[in-house]
Length: 143
Length: 307
Image 1: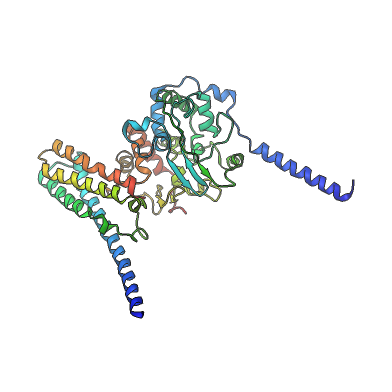
Image 2: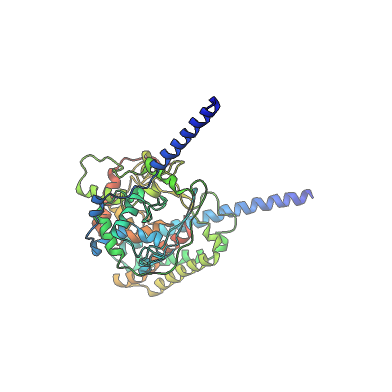
């Protein structure tokens, strides 16, 4: 019986730790997106010169990030909705919709990488749908 | 009459006087004839700009509406607050379900005084506490624009408001305490740009309704103007948009204007929640208006994060 209680306590501790890890992991993923946007957005806005290699490198990193984030069950497990998080309760109320939003972002970043834009106009055309995911997903799933 | 009889009588008279004073003080106060006359001759083209500046679509279009659906004013957005759950009504041109029969004067009374055509108070979830600072001509223009929008059938669900807030007449007392069409911030000789920003932020833009903390009676705490704090609606915190600690003091005016157009912060974070819809409104304005809002936010007193 005692053993069972220890095991239960250990399991609870582990799931609390897992939730904290997931929270940190997803925040790091979001922060990386911000730093990649800092490279890509000024080029799209024509505040920085277009360079195909720089753009493709950032798009590839963004795509790797987006693909990693499609595992929403691991990154937003039950119990990771409290503490230092701005994830909206809607993430857990509407997991299917949240999964779809992440899948769409991943599909858009994959398409941008596949396009491998060679000039500003081509980059702007693939970047616009990528960037529009930020606002639409944050509107629904972030406080 | 016995002594106790006299006592009871004077108590009854006092109670009646109290009721009469409450009834008098809490009476809805519609616009007078001179003010109504200023609402004539609105221009629909200018009114569209007021529509976006006023953020009408954020509550009165269907929840999550985008593109042209933001002009379909069927209502239905819920605001969950400590006073109850408010549901934004249909303000399309439908004659029964919407506001199809409204004159410019009716719209003026609603927006500038918080009074319905039937002469009742509106709940201040409808942000007339800010709209009351609008120029009557702008309300007239907005009316001219609204009547060009489609009729949409269907009433939004009823609001669910807890007692005692369910007594509408009590809002008259709330108005005595908090409804005031004077500028919020006293600015010393503001430039034309800053003055325009002040009008947009304190009036139609109604930024303070979310970005300023509220007291226990639901009035804005003007000592913490735009300092953010716990969200009055939904959950989480609303950011401090002054230059005080925790705020946006290290943002340039251009960065603030950029956020209002694109939704991206200087760190390329992207705003979420109800601000995403506000950005869609702000993006419709001329860039000079976004610049004006930015200039005003830089000109007002800084406060640490509100509470």
